[in-house]
Image (cartoon, rainbow over all chains, first blue to last red; front, side, top):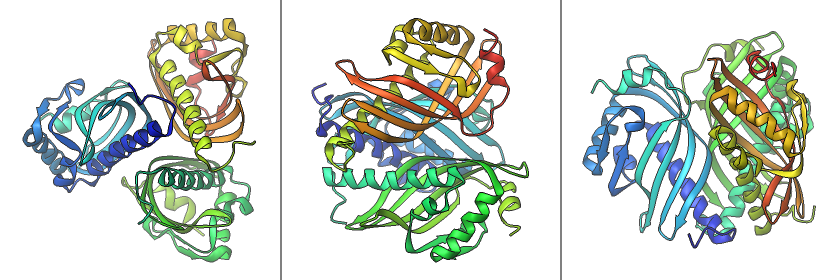
Length: 153
Length: 153
Length: 153
């Protein structure tokens, strides 16, 4: 973890990492731009939602399919990102944690509010920092509404 | 957008911009200092609340009148600011977006909780970064309590 | 307040201060590591919860006792930290403010959700920034559930 110092290089990378995760929140809350959503993920990314009792998706085709369904299901989204922290930073590889209050309303009228933590690996390339491993799990006990909306598929 | 680089200059301006918006939240949550509130706005500022079905206010006199009424109406406020991002930065002009969970209680006992996004222009002068255009709109569907409290005026 | 400038030194200290408070949130939300919790406090720290109608604790023994009881009482915690700002910074002494949405569930099944502000003094030593004075108070009116859980002791 050569860059995990208190220096300016660390601050610049931390900011870039946080902006990458904020960008993911913009994409998931826009609910209408799959290409923009996929630009958040490395080509070999894994989207592991087993912590929410949902599937594990590997690679862009599977991940894109999941978000296509989410965008089809939901009319509103708001992912409130806080408590961002860099757990590991080693050159072009990083691991971050954050809290997310995930809110939304499905087109069927179901209201969702979940309190989760994100545990993400990111990798830096010419495309900037992108998510290579996405894992989330409840920080507070989960309401049933989440699985009602997403799990039927 | 000459300063939209990954460099330290960008980081310093981004921090100054975020501190300017946090300062606005301090002012709106204090509910008792109109001069401090107005120090957040450029002399020619526009406060555009049409996204909330409320009026559009131009210049300090109109804006001050609006906040005077808010301060008279509300007993508690808490504006939770997250997902801050710099959309544009060009010298002394900037545009930022952020999420705000706006909570409060009116003196009449009405509880308010709204989930909005801020879309702000800021301008830098000797007074630091100040808001020149303030726009907000719902990120999630709005409860009726907001218009109940503010719209009667 | 020699370091309260717009420079890079201020940014580095502000980031270190925010990381110290995020670390406290990690500790209070883990609910299982008292040594890690106590590493957040200077040896002479004061934990003043009188703003919540709870006691004032002085020094590690008293503070550790309080958190031992919290960890025994609670099954889930989530402390959402926002609106972080540096109010004072003078060498190795600092004062910060922040908002915290404090959520949790007690083992007895009581749900807690409080909206408070933190008012903290921190001191820097070889151990990094640690909290020397911890004060919090409601930003929005408090539900009765909080005192139900913690006050019986």
